[in-house]
Image (cartoon, rainbow, N blue to C red):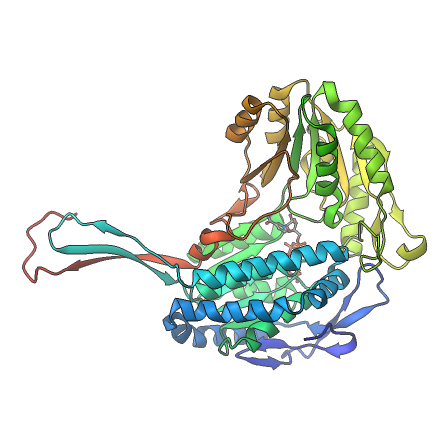
Length: 498
Ligand code: NDP
C-alpha cells in the first residue's frame, strides 16, 4: 500500500482484477496545496468500463448475499486491522490529495476506522422482528435481505470517510458494489479497496471505477441491475440522479448541500462559542457539508463575539497541510477557489461588510496552490446570496437577530437542513431549538461538525433524501424487509387475514 507518485498509473478494480480502462485514458491527481506534485494517474473510464463493473458486481452478488452476515463482517474487520496499521500513510495520502491539514486528515482516517469497526460487528446484528400473527400456530417475522448490486458515488471533501461509510454497510448487508470516487480524490478509495482485497473480499464484491461522473456515474444510475444508489455531493447532481433512479424504481439516498447556522444567544459562553465557530467555519477549509457557514447572534453578545471570531480568524496559519503548524489548507481545486472568490465578491456587492480575509493567497508556500484567506462578513442580510447559498469554502456570514425568536427564524430560513448548533445556557431556549430547528442533526454548545459511526447522519429539506447514513440505518438502506408467515397447523386456514 503506497501513495502513488509521478507517472505511476493506477487501474480500475473490476471482478477482483486491477484492469486498464477500455478508454486507455488517464488523468493526473494533483496536490491542491502544490500542484507541481503529481500523485499518479487514474483511469478516465467510460461507459464500457462502468458496464464491466456492473457485470462483475451482478455476477458476484448471489454468492456474497448467501455468505453469512458474521463472515461478511469479519472481512470488514480484517480490513479495519490492515488500515489501522497504516493510519499515518492514509492521513498523508488524504492530506496530499484533498489538502486538509495532516491532523484533520488523521481525524478523518480515524473516523473511517471507527465506521469499519462498527460495521464489522453489524454482520452479527442484521435483525428483523417477530410479531404475533392474527392466526393461531403461525410464526410471523421479517427478514432483512440485500437489495442487490448497488452504486456508491462519493464527493472529494471526505475522500476516506465517505467511501467507507457507504462501502462498509453495503458489503456487510450482503450487497455487491461499484464505488465511484470523485475524480479529484481517488487515492484514499484505492487504498481502502486494496485493504479489502487483502482482507479476503471475494472478486467482484467491490468494484472501483474512476472517471467523470457524467460518463460513468450516469451509466451506473441507469443500469437496471443496480438496485440502490448512495450518493453524496452537490444538489445539482443529486437531485437529477434521484429523479432518474426513481423513474426506474431504484432506491436512492442522496446527501447534498448545507448552510449550517450557529445560533449564539446573549447568555452563551463567549469563548466556547468563538472557538466552536472557528473550528466549524475554517476546519477542513470550510469544505465540509457540516461546516458552519452562518452565525446568527443576538445583540447582547454580538460585537464581542464578532471581535473574538475575527481576531482568531486573522491568526490562522494557512498553507500546505503537511507543514507543521499549518491550520488551514487550500481549496480542493481551481474551480472551488473560483467559487469561493465569487461568493466573496457577491457578498460585497450585496452590501455585507468584510471584516477579514477575502482574497486569494499566493505568497510563500501558497504560491503553487489554491489558497483563499479565512473570510468573515457581518451585516449579511437575509435573502442575500451569502445568507442562503452554500459556498463550501472558508467564508463565514454573521447575521444579527433581535432576539431568540428571530434567531430561530433566521436559522431555519434556508432551503437546506443538515446541521445547526446553539450556544446558550438557558435550557428552555435550548429545548425550543431542539424542537423547532429544521435540521437532521443539532449540536448544543459544540460546533456544527462531526458525526459518529453509531449515530445516524444526514439532513432534511433540500439537503437529503432517503435513509440516513452511518449507524444501523446506514446498513438498512441496503436491505429490504421480507415479511414471512409460517403456518405450522398443517390445516386449512379459518382466520381472517386481509
Ligand atoms: P458533485 O455533485 O460534483 O460530485 C459528487 C460525485 O458525483 C462525484 O463522484 C462526481 O464525479 C459524481 N457525478 C458528477 N456528475 C454526475 C452525474 N451526472 N451522474 C452521476 N454522478 C455524477 O459534488 P462534489 O464532489 O463537488 O462535492 C461537493 C458537494 O458535496 C457539496 O455541495 C457538499 O455540500 C456536498 N456534500 C454533502 C455531504 C452530506 O453529507 N450532506 C457530505 C459531503 C459533501 P466527478 O468527480 O467525476 O465529477
